[in-house]
Image (cartoon, rainbow, N blue to C red):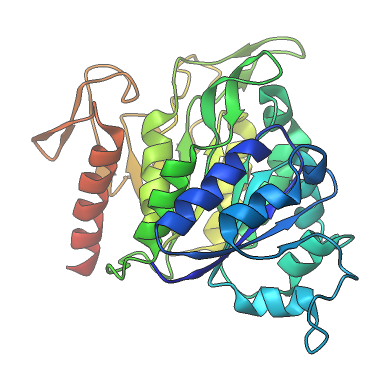
Length: 334
């Protein structure tokens, strides 16, 4: 790979995975340097990262290891890609609000390299409105995300919040630097995933069944193909409608991938796809989508889907996403 990757590690139990990530990236040929927050050093000693990366580990803004340069500026310029993994709710909040109170946040504000954020936290923290608001702001600012996976969390909960596996993150990085064509470079892709809820009153809401697996696969494949991706998952439908109208103004040429399941009760408002290059999955919408993909059951749980009379397998979401984006970008070129 022969690329310079700066790994910024913030404090959570998933820090142990970041050590394995350094190993995987180094094995793939990357030159990795690591920067740690004070909280991260409570979980793992910097020596572990130093051994794995064969480079100094940085954590003190005022510890200038080379007097000829300013370390946080030098590292910001050195990196071809910056990974923030794990990214805690605290780190995400600081970045979203431009706070630079340690070496990691100062360096992130100084860089012009692509920055990928890999959140890891308790499922309820990840779903908190403040965290979602901060993620939306970072997405609008051009940051990219490696979505957390679902499973058993260190806190004992089961849900979304696990740092993505080092092997998968490394594969994404390798693909990013593979030199393959980036048909979506310069494009914005807005993806809804999972289930969109409709509040009935202050204590009750209606939410259809959905896993979000297809939406996340389409979002990840769009990132690989060079797009700026805005991902909206498991949100209030009224909020999504407002967000989408704002995004239409901000990104008039955006692709809108509406992969979230929507309730079909009478109280459900209808999303407008007018003014977007929309791909839908059988939901009722205002306007005509560019592509409407049909399946026997909801796309997240179906074994195949119908695209312009052609049946595509959905049992492998990554392969389905690759096939669909190849179809979309081919049509776009034509």
